[in-house]
Image (tube, rainbow, N blue to C red; front, side):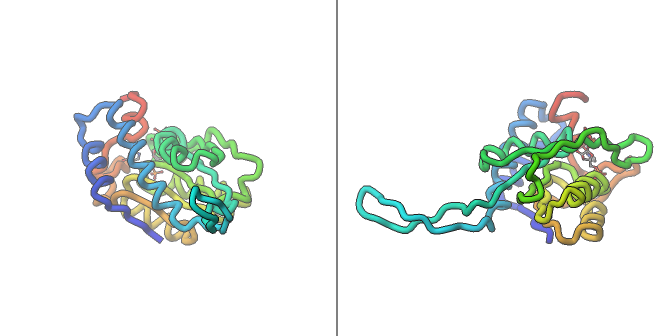
Length: 207
Ligand code: PRP
Ligand code: URA
């Protein structure tokens, strides 16, 4: 299922990120802030369990998150910028890394790194990547996690193209996508239009 998180705070911050005059420091901070807001929504259906506590006034039955183990898996490099915000909200989550870059000629993802926590198959996995363009990177990342035994996977993105969303829906219909905006289309170089440019370069200042 596609969840478009068009909250005014997210939309406002994303518009500043899209502006080509926004520099690396602000871009990274805004991505961090948006990721925290998105984490709030992504974790909305975490199960709760009852716990007996005592307030300064009396005993009561409260609720805490019931042992559901989380993992955040950024797709390198740009996904790192979203994982930090997610970890601020869910600091006990473990972190896996998938290194993928898009070949400049073919726009197909090339794997260069893969490292997961040992118990990844028992965790609710949140894959982070700001850009969902052709969908190749996200789809390959999810396929690898499924091969690793992961059963519950969510995808957290910032901006997507209809093409990438269609690929994910076709290849991984079980994976919920959380996204701040769905843009118009891909250009001839497979960049999202209007988009925000190359997310990795803008986060790390490698333009
Ligand atoms: C970008 C982005 C995604 C991918 C999206 O990464 O962060 O991983 O492209 O494109 P797709 O949906 O067509 O696969 P990039 O290859 O530029 O690597 P980087 O994050 O290291 O800059
Ligand atoms: N990767 C990016 O960083 N931006 C795009 O628009 C497409 C892929």
